[in-house]
Length: 266
Image (cartoon, rainbow, N blue to C red; front, side, top):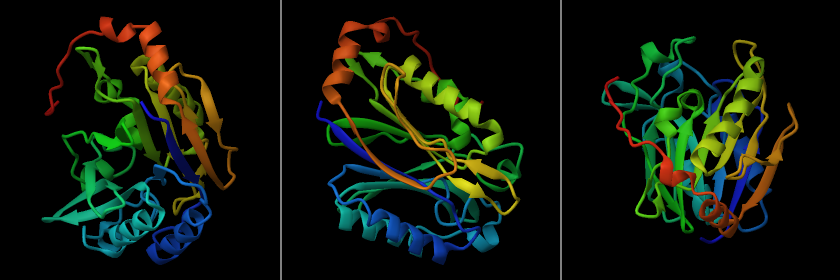
């Protein structure tokens, strides 16, 4: 496997103000001066975690998707973020993985948060999305998905792992930061994959504080990078493909994983 260079952006978000957020991320992305393979933004990067679809939802040909397309072409990197999408009279918390050539892949958030109205207003997805970036297989998920290990469980078959890097883009409140940090490390250990969690900082429109605590973790569960809580951060981390392969070859837990299937309607 090649090495993978990933940039994570931890920042505050303007509440339900897409114009300001797009301008803000335009500036932040432009501070990444070195070549990278992947840039990850917080959940609902253009509005903050809003459940106000009448004001905040967009279509797939809207300005925020166009912005991601422009910046992916400019940086020659895959850019990953989520947007509140309106489609066929339904609303989705949709992850967009935009490639430099203009093509994109999507994932609709599977687990909708029951402590907000998300699960009543949005439509949950039922399919995962596996990205291929510079010889790495990448599984992107969204915020509350982190609490459900079956949905992210890696598999091993005929000497090959289903994926190599697990990503979470989030608006995860500071009151539950210990859970966030613990589960990110656990997902790396149990799946023998690198993990990156990218979270926002600042107060949202409900005056809920977010500390960020964005992290990049290797396949052993060791923290390679941890952003300072509450501080805007743009950080680029190199993930070693050879280190991950060596660890997997010497510690062959994947060969003993249990076989399972998922009931998508459960």
